[in-house]
Image 1 (cartoon, protein in one colour):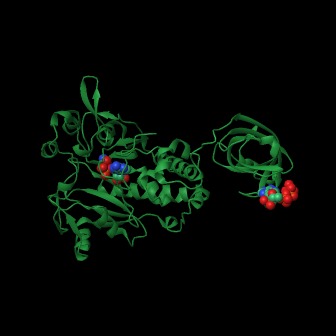
Image 2 (tube, rainbow, N blue to C red):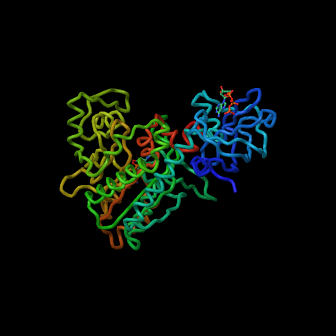
Length: 435
Ligand code: ATP
Ligand code: AMO
């Protein structure tokens, strides 16, 4: 039986013969001995020592099966355990032109992402990501929400037409889904609180460190909720994911040099900052916005918050902040208007601390058939494409709401990654659709 290095690195195996399978990660040949760091299929490494002549043709990334006796040696890197190799079976000798070495440009690592996945940084990221996804799922399952999936080929925009990916669907035109929200709304009438984890697609034309063209979207929707209920779900979910990830992935976060002191303090409640107050704060700091024409002017009530303003609002925060009550004019058609305050949407965004920006968005949905039809038209969308959605308002409409969380945005904050592309295995952006 072949073992993983994490199993071998314990006193139980000292003096015993073991077999491991993996790939040559580093190779140092001396006159008599060769020291090969072998990486197993979960990214763990262990030093294997062979007489130099036994591994003469061996190269970096060759796939091997090593049998030998485990010993402890303070000189052995990565934990002081090593294997004195008795036998080595080479499955495949890797070409000597393996393009990934110790120092590489970010661009090359993206071009060769299929190989860069073998670096320990990417393995650490992938493990943290797997845990974040697992914890998101665990939270919803443990709290009685039902998992569903919505189609990703759709006829209607959710988040505005400018970021739609169009595709030919037999003889029709269709789009890649920007959000499962409208479908989740249809499900709550018979399934109660539901959630889904599916890819969302956005033809984002700007190159930023926060946007992907395809991202993992964790979305939830529930009937008979208030805005406060929806905020509480989000702060509990995010706190749960962070607390557990910090514990379950301590080793990987340490490998990425992420000091998690700040993350350990993330727990409900998160501050609720009214939009009007946010604008006041920004105005007091002389914040400006650039209009489409290119002219700069002071920020004022009615403006959307951009990343610079989000950064300003959260720069001293130690926990995320909910900005609540955005003007409906800057939010999509489905946002419910506050019946007591005209023009104000019952919607909120969660902004991560220290300038990582928006990580979730959500709120109550407009449940009145007349208002929502008007808003669809106002946004320049075709009500016919939303006829099925409008049925949800025609037949037994109820107050309801939900939210969407971008997994990669959350990952970026958790791992302190410079760029959102670091948090996904095969990133899709405006300039990258391979590998
Ligand atoms: P050993 O008794 O562990 O087989 P050795 O006595 O044959 O070692 P040395 O002459 O002490 O080898 O070491 C030669 C060089 O080989 C050292 O400078 C060191 O760089 C390297 N070396 C030897 N053993 C190890 C090891 N277990 N891990 C890393 N490097 C080693
Ligand atoms: P929104 O468009 O704000 O809202 O998206 C929800 C969350 O998804 C993430 N996100 C992205 N992540 C990476 N790259 C992108 N291009 C990208 N775009 C969005 C963010 C964001 O907070 N249906 C609504 C939500 C709702 O009201 O339920 C929606 O999709 O983390």
